[in-house]
Length: 590
Image (cartoon, rainbow, N blue to C red; front, side, top):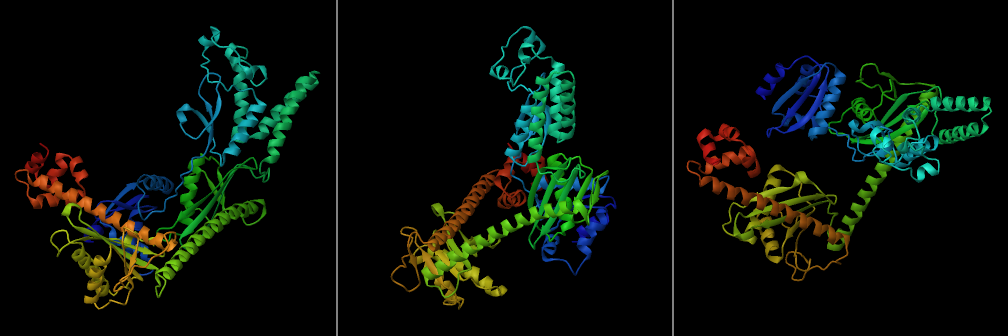
């Protein structure tokens, strides 16, 4: 800890990003600050009023790194990049596995307008993303109704068109294309249509509306009534499309709206993007809190991320809370009355809808798990609801490297932090019964010493022999009879109780038995994985010890530092030499 305090004292007062690393040199937290030194110092100077999660974070810090930035907003973007790349366990992560569609005007002669889910800026000019495929297709359909944009993928180079390499297709004959492939439409006229289409894709419908209106009046003034009628039909199409759009207020133009609502463990942020008074994009995201972050901090993170996703250039952001970090040139307003306040209500309504939906889903899952546990209690005739279940399994494939595992399920769900591996210490050779007695005894001896509560149910993977051994361990600790214990045999999925000569038969379709099978299979998987890892390390350690000058301690030192055999093999001579010396490193790599 003294090393950490020395490192903190040397931190700069500048804005930037700080990074905390664990003992394994794994990045566990990234934060931003106006002053790196003041912010990091606060983690180590506060002794009261700090939540439990933050105290746990501080206890794991072994190294601090930092990057200075020009401003706090630059620090926010940098923080966001570090989080997305490394996904530290104490940072919230704005996850979004949904790929939104874009419309792209391709960079080519006589450009096509296509839709895609891949964002590759070098291919053309992108518009979007759109919140749904339906919304995107409606915009694309409008463009194709108003303008004669080609849909073919022909290479319309000047040479190809001049040499008459192509013939017009059906699209030309039904009036959807003017035949640029045969040189029947000038490139300048085609690009004018593309220019008008861009206004629609940007959401600037009023520019297109005025252009078409002027065109229609011009044709009518010259008595070209058929052409005027054709343009009028386009105006009608545009008006019908506009009427379907969610128009807020023509005076409220080009703004972003963000609102946040939260509960103890989660926050919900809604984003509305408004162009020319119409909502062109809407999205609501869920954020899982990691360190009881305040809503203002969560909102700032979401604003930066969502505006980046949508390439928003709007210079005004409305929100229900102050946004603490803003990019230069962007104004944040928290409206109190009027149409802008109504927009906040609309956005908040969307956030509350997702919150309600997620709470119902979580409550439904909780209720279902309670039902399964109630069925299991009834099936096994247990005195209390088995909220906490612990299951033990041995693994000694081939009679070597015997190990065991214990998995813990709470409220019907696996609790990974409660899983335990055991190296068998007192048993020689493949003796499942003695191994089971050892690990059960070690587990509950420690539980009693630490004053921790016992589980509601203990499960042993195996039949009467393993169960009897586990019961012996409980008797030696004077807790036999205080907690229900049972064995589950693999062959017929029979449940055995101590001192009961006949197995308890539970319906194979019972949700209670299915839960027991899931727990037993998870314990088996966890034991097998550990066994393979240990056997692999033992094999590699033996191989290392076969090299002249490398003994057991050196092999163990390498495994302790690199954590895995794979990482040792991938390490360079320099990295290995830093641990065991140059000569031994060179001997290993021969």
